[in-house]
Image (tube, rainbow, N blue to C red; front, side, top):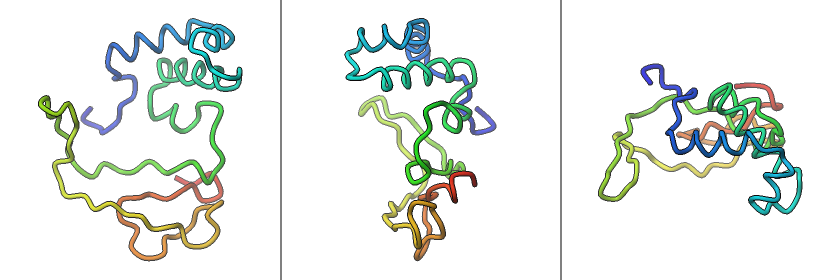
Length: 131
C-alpha cells in the first residue's frame, strides 16, 4: 500500500464474509443475520458488494445509503506509520497523536471551520460535497 490506500487489499477472511453477504439478496441477509428491517440488510449488502468491486475508499465516499452531511467526514490524510503488536493484538500509531474534541464552528449540519486548532479531526463535509 505504497500510495496509502486500502482499495481492495482487504484481509481474506473479510473478503470471504463480504462475498457471502453480497451473494445473498437483502431479504436473505435480513433473515440470516437478524436485521430488524430490510433497509439495514440492504445497506450491508450494498457495502459488501461495493467493497469487493470498487474498494474501500470508493465505498466510503459513494456506497449507498450515504449518511447525512453532518454524519459524513472527510478522509484524513496519512499522518503516521502503523505497526501491529501481536501481543496485544492491536495496531499502534508510530507517531505522537493528540486526540481532539473541538466542535465545528458555525452550523454543524454543514461542517465549517473549526473553532481553535483543527488537530487530527478532519471535520464534516462542507455542504456534503467538499473533501
